[in-house]
Image (cartoon, rainbow, N blue to C red):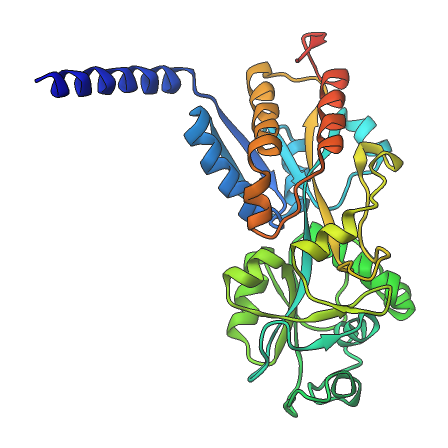
Length: 346
């Protein structure tokens, strides 16, 4: 009987605690970049279990995220293409990084295993320019003498929507290929010389998975989740490196976060023998003047929780959590810049 009574009291306490959590729960909305969606979804699930607050994040692409926050239809926007300082000032927005990851070339070529194929930046640019058209092209074969490559046409897959992943990808190609820079350039959306488009990292991954002899680019977690064969890339130091948490961290190690407005640093083609060349931070956009203080505080609570409690989860999913000195600087910027009704939000 004593055991039953004790169990009943604990259960009642748990019910009361859950009821209190539910009564005080806040739902917030965000939209934007597909690049960080795997980690944002996991963080949101874990955060809800810990706090009762729900984070509803729409993975619609960086362009859509900027549009949604500009239209004030979400509590936060997300973009992999950092917003310039003058635009942040014009719109009254604050920007801060949330996590770091890597974009990887992915291929669907019979017999080619994940991490087996080697490519250089200029060679990738020539493939996406349509100059290198066949998988057994001498330039690819010379870089991969031990890989049997088919005499078949290369199918290029790219993003069809406004995409921060595309910004990072085209920024990288512009740095390594003068031909790409002069004829295509960089941006969230570009005029692609060849190929077909998929919406979101999800869409590109699905197309590459379905289309034999294709090549595309996705955030690394999408490659792993979909069982796609990623490639090695030759970095600025001339070393062929594998995409992994360690090579993304190496690229981000010397990031000068205070060198750009809103900490909007671009991490492509960083120096270092271990650096992955298409590494990117992803960013959050919120209004400096919060019309819904409770929602605004919950956004900060979520990302503060993610910085403190979600770092291991990020690393386990091959993202790179931000260093503590960076998250401390972000928290200081929150306190200095965010207001509601003319008073500090925090």
